Length: 184
Image 1 (cartoon, rainbow, N blue to C red):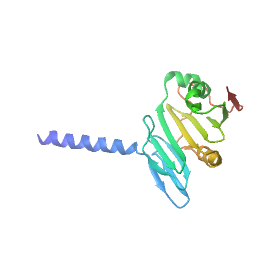
Image 2: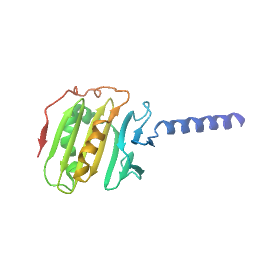
Image 3: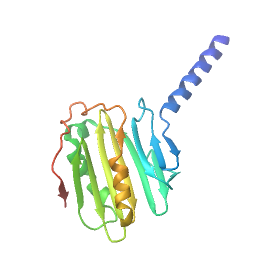
Image 4: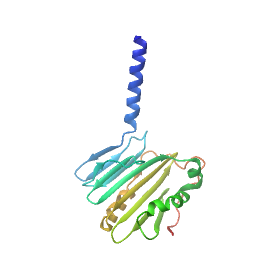
């Protein structure tokens, strides 16, 4: 019986440690908000401007931050074999309707360093979605707000960093730079 209790205690300890690895840390300082995960878990880091605070993440998202009239949300997922094979451009095409939802016009796509950024703006609102594939993981960073926040939100996406890059997805294409384009 004592052996069973020790085994159960050890199992609980291991499970609690595993849960802590997946923790996304949000820390405020005088200059802004630092968001990071342990490299062994989600493996990312980015900085949000001062004034953002953690909010309840919508279903399907790992994290949400909010400031007055502005939001940042992060969706993490394992790549499917089809996503890895198709690469970033095919993935963006498959998500175009979601990224454009609520906006008229076309997405402006920029590429570089194994990432794609889709942005759309109206006179009243701005949305930018950063998509990064790294190893077997997919990252989607959604930044939304008024058009006046576009530069600040673009800087958040630009600063999004993979802590320990795993490289191209297994069986996926090499993620070289491509020219900017527009999806209509």
